[in-house]
Length: 109
Ligand SMILES: [Zn+2]
Image (tube, rainbow, N blue to C red; front, side, top):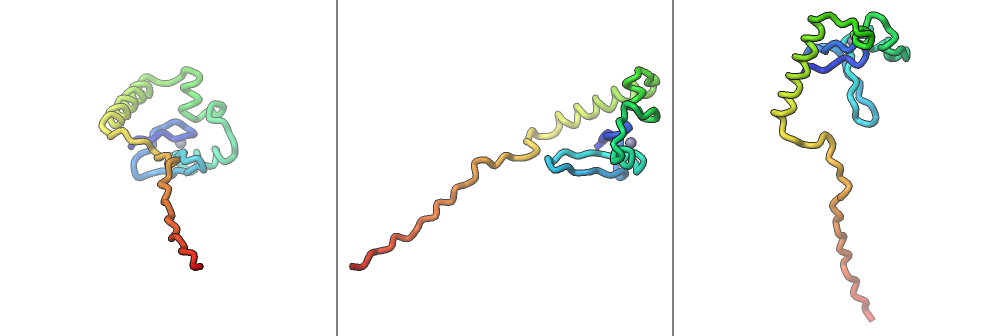
């Protein structure tokens, strides 16, 4: 799975964390309640010093972290390639118009 925390940018381990489903269908992953609460408070991860996003933005990532990022991206690409290409949400614009055949009323004269 390897989803990224929407706030701190760390990968969310499988079986941990939470996600929030937005009205538009997007998923917001949180690795911890700390991240969730900070997000709810409206804080920007770029301005919050303890986040990986901040370090990335400032160019202060350690080499280990950079390597991890590269590996995660490669894994994600492999996973995407393995998946059959199906749209996440089928746009059912063409709803089957069920022709309601109205029984012809025989006018009795
Ligand atoms: Zn987080």
